[in-house]
Length: 221
Image (tube, rainbow, N blue to C red; front, side, top):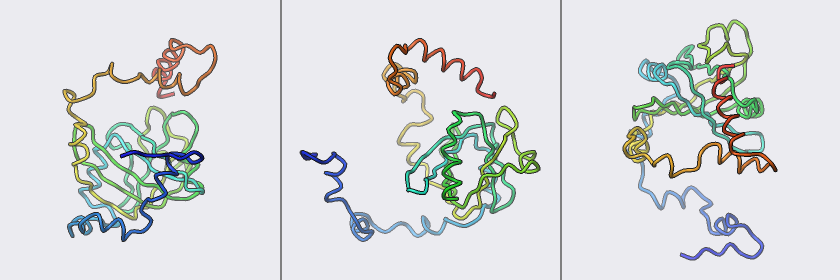
């Protein structure tokens, strides 16, 4: 297939020209889902999904700003660092990061998040979507599991959709099979990517690597 991105438009605009525009067009390409795939979405946490969150040390947070610009960011900590207050409420403590606060800004603007919980080494995942707010209430923060140091704020989520996702994507990706992973020297290092992104005259790879080492050493501060 030849893709012509046009003289004036971007490649994306070229591809969008004949893109699908209605759910009916999409459904024509796919069979109907298994009824259980719809039935297992509920609006609250069960004892089992609460236990799963208690075993999770990694959650991806999806959010968007008021203009619809989307963002996904990982949050990690000791297993169970995301606290479940009841079957409709969970809390994600703040942790030391790059201080951009992208996710929190998005929550302030739209009041919504989507969560994907993972357990390293296991194929089980859990999707949780709902309303959200940012809280700095001292009595709430005191109840949370700190990720290195006590949080100064937390994202509170009111659960609206809970969906145990099938493990196919992690299995297809060989996510937890080191023998199937891409060799480390087959990919650019984190420092190499950062150097190309910053594009600052005089900045060297050694300087970026040293900055990364220092950042990781101080990851809880």
